[in-house]
Image 1: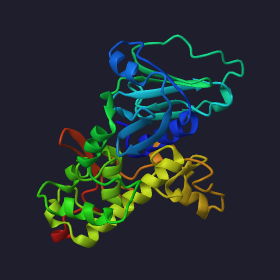
Image 2 (image 1 turned 60 degrees about the vertical axis):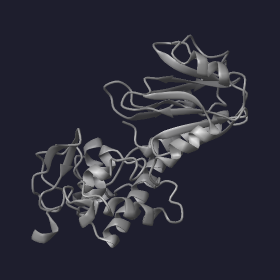
Image 3 (image 1 turned 90 degrees about the vertical axis):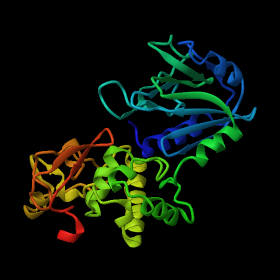
Image 4 (image 1 turned 45 degrees about the vertical axis):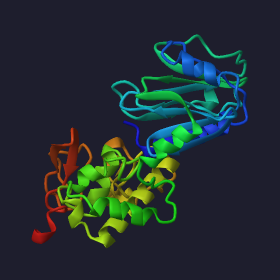
Amino acid sequence: MPEGHSVRRLARQFGDVFTGERLSVSSPQGRFSGGAALLDGHTLVAAEAHGKHLFLHFDNALVLHVHLGLYGAWSFGGDRTFTGSSSIGAPRRVGEQESPAGSDADASYAGPPAPVGAVRVRLASGHGWADLRGATTCEAITAAEAEAVLARLGPDPLRNLRGDAGRFARNLRTRKTPVAALLMDQKIIAGVGNVYRAEVLFRRRLDPWMPGTDVTEPDARNLWRDVVNVMTDGVADGRIITTPPRYWAVNGTTAAKAVRAGQDVPAKSGSFPRGEDAHYVYKRQGLPCRVCRTLVLIAELAGRNLYWCPFCQQPQEHA
């Protein structure tokens, strides 16, 4: 499922390419025909994200509310002035993906192509188009209804408003549920998914099975700050990277060995690690922990796979 950084990038993209544009809104699949009729011909005035929810605000006071869920994805296309990406979301069997399309856009763009597959909603302007497929939620709602959705969600680390750290700490520390499950609860914190929860718990050396009530106030606030940091990096990078460059492979060796050998290691902003080098524990079950060499474990928690190091994240009373 796309995590909060991807939805934030989606909101930014819609803001860049569609804000101020009068849009043609349709539902080629037919499942959103009623909602599309309410939005068709109106101007997009704002795009915002909160956690995993996208809100597109139109000039008739209606909002297109989208939650991609496990299988939702947006695809984009247009002329050379349309700086869209070819895909943001969770394409089937591939996982979260984003790939640039601006340089390949057709200079002779004459309108969107015929819809392919089950396109729930299509937005089109004079310069480009966006198609949505497979979303869990796609609805036209009022501004008041959008506010009601927001009221049910926890604080968003990518907003990081005044008081959000304290609100998160209170949400976390009043529940006896394991902290790893609480991080996936969108009422506790909005936008964290399976990758971020495994990685930040490791980075903070927190036992994922610890009840929220056992997390100290300083630990809860430090956890919030780390989530803010890694998700902010995710927005900038377009992917989740939680390891520092010393763990990245360089010419077949690790970055740490490359440094010792006098090789140059690219800065994080200039290049990305291989997929398996980007994380500490996520999907590394059975492999040695990058820090202590203990084998990374996997277990199911609340219907999702949890990854952790039993030594680095051992219960505090035994640490």
